Length: 90
Image (tube, rainbow, N blue to C red; front, side, top):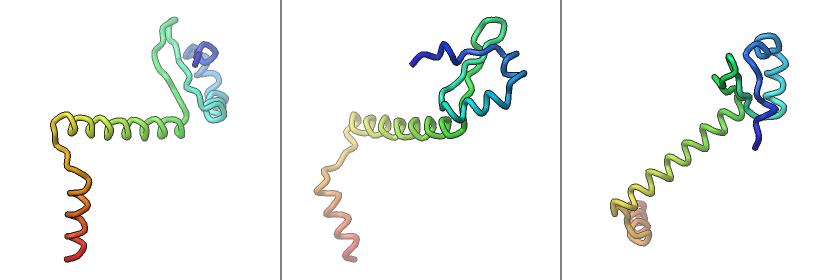
């Protein structure tokens, strides 16, 4: 994905804030804000931000699961099911 068309100077953001927010919501692509010709910030709409956070949370859960597997902290599914059924029967 190319962000070339989504690079704007901070002066553009200041002068066109409402338009920028509308564009972010419609296109759902982040915008890179520059200051003195250097990238300084990235802005995005709230829905995209929330989706990114959810994705990161899922990736973290997967990474933690992989760490548990590497440490050998796993149990056979049959043993877990048997334990749960025994608990339910009580």
